[in-house]
Length: 197
Length: 215
Image (tube, rainbow over all chains, first blue to last red; front, side, top):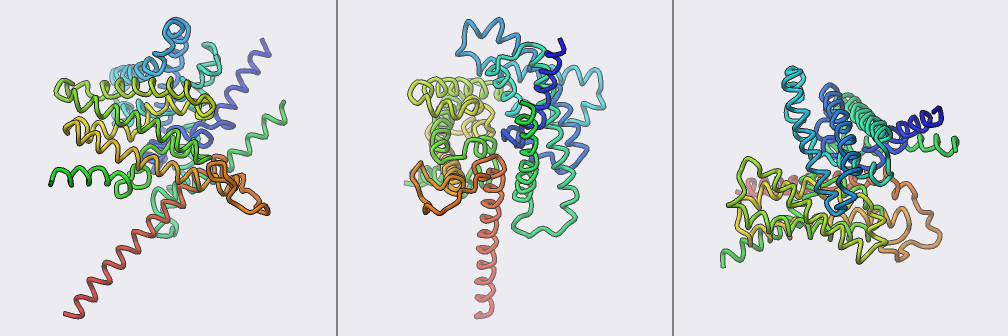
């Protein structure tokens, strides 16, 4: 039991910081550039993404167990349809349960469908043959890592807007440079594994 | 004659002037994730070209039949079908490259460039123009992938397409083929393009000013 718990902790740490979806795998760069201008929208989008990742992970496990063994060529189509439905589901529930949060998220909610981090999560989870609990922990870790990266960049960009940036570096170029430096910093976490193993 | 030149212009636009990666900032995830070597860029570019042209052809052919309300879902399912084909074909003919690209072939589904072209072009225009536009955009995308891949490969490994380019004394910058190198490369490329644009605008302004003086 204790071994299982430790394994789950490692899955969480690996997904959130060591193999950070945004900074190490380049997944979800579109929202990363689009909404990382302000801290509060970054946080909200991060939370919505974590939720969709959780739902997707559960559905992906179900598909992998019952449907896809019979029709492996349907994998990509099945996953993308599940993600689109999950986003729709989240939208409907949120509209009813918490209209304030629904309005605050606005356009970002439907856009989660085309966030490649979500499809990436479903695919990586399948490749690694995670079960239900492992998948949920993996989704939580990946979502937390995505949110962490989004918040870090948003914070730096808010400060950076006040500073003197060379004219040609303004906008996207500067965001990428900041992301590169953060990515460099996150590589330091790779040491966690070699020292533990 | 006019039609032919229009088609030509549609094709050329995607190559550089409206380049999907450098100008429109679309499809960045694959553009950075797989480009630690030039050959990976070619492979992913070819797969994306196939998917974009195929999807544009189908969407444009059926644009009268697809109801507006469910168009996005329809686009995604059409794209996913072509991606599945590309995935299976690549696994059959080039298993080594397929293994290296890993999850990034299925992730073509989420490439916002492909969905964007369906919505902005293929759903509104006839088949011939849509396919031309798709070809121009996807070749522009491939050019960007190969350019980023070549820069990262030559600095990080001293080679381009596996051929040694640097003298033996060159110490490879390993960081360039690791994730941070991808971010640094695209940041500097964007800054360089912004610099070129600023210089061209300054020149245009200067030349119009001098004309004023002569007058």
